[in-house]
Amino acid sequence: MPSRSSASRRTVLRGAAVAPVAGLGLAACSASGQGSAGAGTPTAPVDLGAESEVAKGGAKLYRDYNVVVSRDGNGTLKAHSTICTHAGCPINKLQGTTLICPCHGSQFDAVTGKVVQSPATEPLAELPVKITSGRIIAGPGA
Image 1: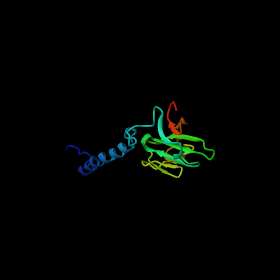
Image 2: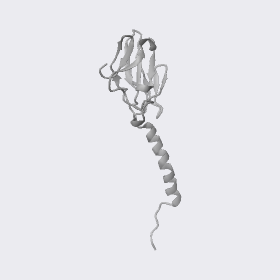
Image 3: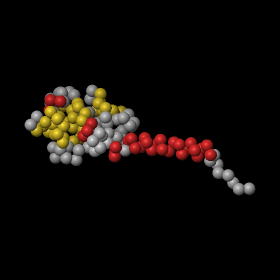
Image 4: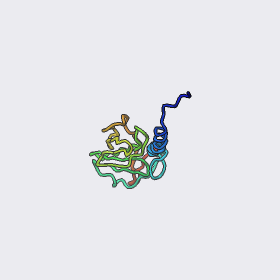
């Protein structure tokens, strides 16, 4: 008598139905789907806008460039990539000075780039930032 496979038809069909859905989750978190501009963190200096857009003690998220800029109490600007260090998802939410990743819930301090809630364990990459003619310029070469 021929031996039968231990996988039932139901098990095989259930696996086939779940596989495409699981793939959607991976696509949503892949680095290739970053930002509305379709690009990752700037690879050259970008003009983000007026210096006055970032208040002392605050932060502003620039989704189109995957950058957050913060200003400390002394007026010093800092910029960080908003590509999550956990799975490469573009972070699209800023509450106060906390960045929240939509994929797995990692949270980062927008001022320091440090992780404040896992699953991410590595801080966000800091980017060069400067003011030129009253405009915030961030990215390599800034």
